[in-house]
Amino acid sequence: MLNIKEVADEADVIVNGYAFKCCEEGFRVLNLHRPDKAVVFSQKGEVLETSMDDIELSIASDYLNENRKYMED
Image (cartoon, rainbow, N blue to C red; front, top):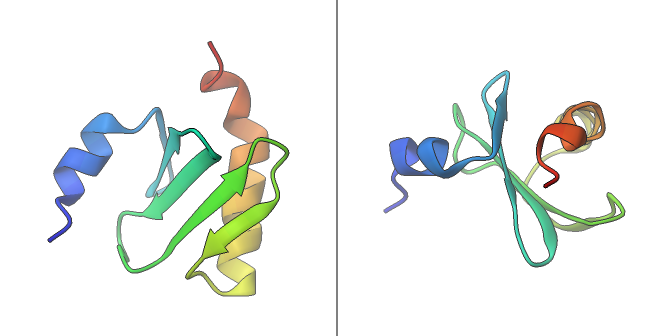
């Protein structure tokens, strides 16, 4: 089972309940309030995999674009 506290602790950035983590594919995003909702973005911001609806996907994408600078080395 998914450990939400562990995911939050390992996140590079948390914005409004969304945990963002850099990964090999690009960025993994998990809604901490609804852990069944997640997305993987490529480095260019393209959706590779998702269980989010279009509205939530748009929100996560906006948060990524606004906060990407805090995740880069």
